[in-house]
Figure 1 (spheres, rainbow, N blue to C red):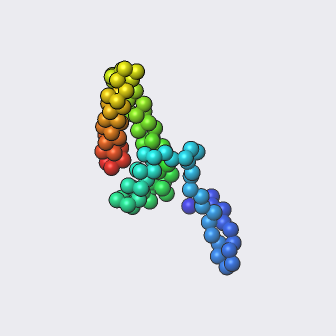
Figure 2: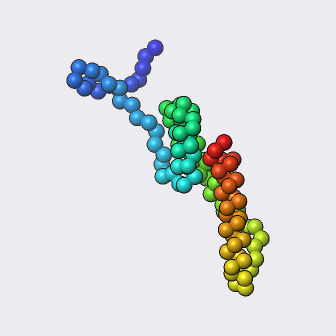
Figure 3: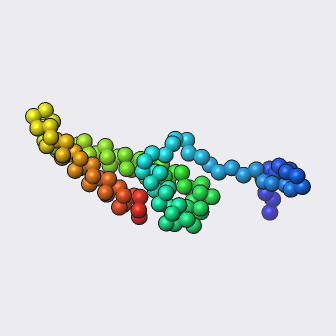
Length: 110
């Protein structure tokens, strides 16, 4: 079996030039929450995903899905903002809390 690794000589040792794939875009709130959960609760799974190069695509997918769910919040019916501002604010806060609870339960901590 031949390897296509490049090595750098450091002192008396030959060390492989290894790099991990990096994400093109920075992680958002939900991607970072998922990463922290994996690091703390499932360190083996986190390490395997990191070494396989599947961690950052997974975290970006979690972030995209969470943002999609939050964007759908605006399409839900709500009270008229101009005539009843406080009711609209309460309604939107309740919707956001419900969606964030769903995100935490189904995307982050699953």
